[in-house]
Every structure is written in structure tokens, then in C-alpha cells.
Image (cartoon, rainbow, N blue to C red; front, side, top):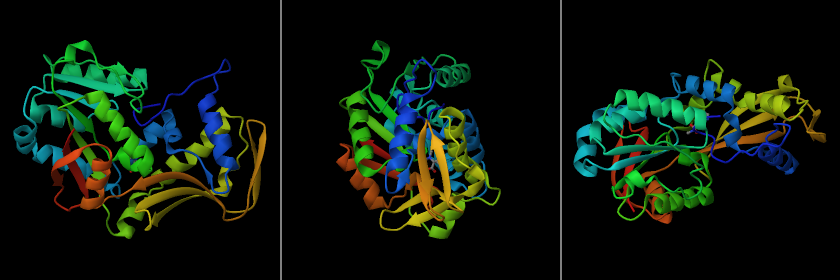
Length: 320
Ligand code: AVI
């Protein structure tokens, strides 16, 4: 599990993730079957996600990296030096160094639920920035986190790149934004990536690439259920679907049954009619206004906004 695993996973004595089992059994029992997207990120899913970020159709990583690598002077002027950067999720190998180079922070605090991943990326960052105090904290950032004493008196900059906020429905997203504000405290700022609404054809291609990597990422969730929860899902009878939901301005990913199927998960029986789907992910896209509204609802005042040259993706700086 890696930095996209957004919730605490408890395991029972059999090593089975009880939270995973609970979410899957409940989600498969709903009229619209659904499994929360955080369960994509086992080791195989995390590797597939890394592959996705390098796909020609998947523009968000490239666009956000372009902003971070070309607007450093503006970040430094607006954010100022000497803050403690608190990253929600372990630092990505590319984006975090770009920000740290630009704003010369006083400390770096990556927060992540996955301890091994956190320590590995913290070590890599510390090696790259000798002299920068790095204080990794193993924690579920969906809840308020106590930051290390060493950064208690420093002004904070929260960093939440990647548009991971878009994987949450508005209620969860506003809860997280408010929790971040509580974690970071008065006078803090937040630099957050939010993907933009665009031509649905571009969006659907980004989530249904020609090489089929996103399809494998989605199908890996069914394979993970089979591996970890004694599942018998006939994965060959599921197909990856990515569709634009215009009412909610989001790409939805589903696993669709190509024929009527029946299977077991953790001793419970389920069936799907031909054409029925399991909803596996939402990826919300934002306009300038809807992004600002979400931030305001979450307790943050937007102050500055950058987009890449093609206007595909935005990074927003907001004040607590
Ligand atoms: C992690 N998250 C921001 C990705 C996204 O674009 O919503 C996850 C993803 N799902 C399919 N492709 C990428």
C-alpha cells in the first residue's frame, strides 16, 4: 500500500484486512455495487498507478509537473521561504523536489499511512536535500495529525498534489480540507492540485488508455478481492469502463459484467446481471469556480492559481 491508501487498514489474526472485507461486502450488497477507490493501491495497484502517470493519455502528472517546474519564482514570492512543508501522502519522486527547490523550506514533514513507503521516500528526499530537516509522520491524514515538536513554531505549507482530492465526494473532500486546516493550524497555507473540466473525449482517453494499463489497474481490484478475501470473481467476465458523468463533473470507473455471473467473497454469494457494474472510482474535475467553492467550504480562502500551458490542470494556493 502507498500514499494513495487514504484510510487506516486494520488486520485480524488471519492477516485479512477486516476494513477491506467490510467495505467490499457492504459495497457489493448495494443496489449500485461499489468498492471505495482507496483499495486500488496494493503493491500491484500502486505499480500500475505509477505506470498510469507515464501514459501519453494521462495528462495530470505531466501538467502538474510542468506548473511546478516553471513557476518556482512565483511560488517563492507568494509563499515565502522558511515554512515547514507538510505533504499529505509521501513525497512523489518528481513533484516534491520541485516545490522544495523553489521555496527553500525550513523543514519537510511527509504524512502517510504506509510506513515503509513513507520512510523510503523520506530517506530519498533527505539525501537529495542535505541540511533540510525531514520529519516523516506515520499517520492517517483523514484525521487530525499531531505534528512533530520540531516544527511547532514554524509557519506551515500543506502540499496535496495530484488531484487526489478529486477522488472524494464533496462531503469527504470538505471534511478532509477542514481536517488539514486543523492539522496545519492558524496562519497556514495549502498548495493543492485540482484537475480541470475539459473535453470528455480527452478525459475518457486519460482513464481508458490505448495500452490498457488503466484497465489492468481497475481489474486488479477484482483480482485483489479474489486474492485477499477468498473471492471467486470471474475476472475475465469483467471489463473496464470509464465514463464521464456530466451531472457530477466526474470520470467514473466501473467494472462491467459482460455476461451474467455469480461468485463468492469471504463466504458471501453475489451475482451480477449482464451489463451490471461495480463502481470503483470517481475522479472529480473542477472549474475555477467549483474549485474555489470547495476550498471555501473546507475552510480555505483561495489566493492564487496556476495552470499548465494547455489549461488542463490547476494548482491553487489557499490561506487558512
Ligand atoms: C490518484 N488519482 C488522482 C488518480 C485520478 O486521476 O483520479 C487515480 C487514477 N485512476 C485512474 N487513473 C488514475
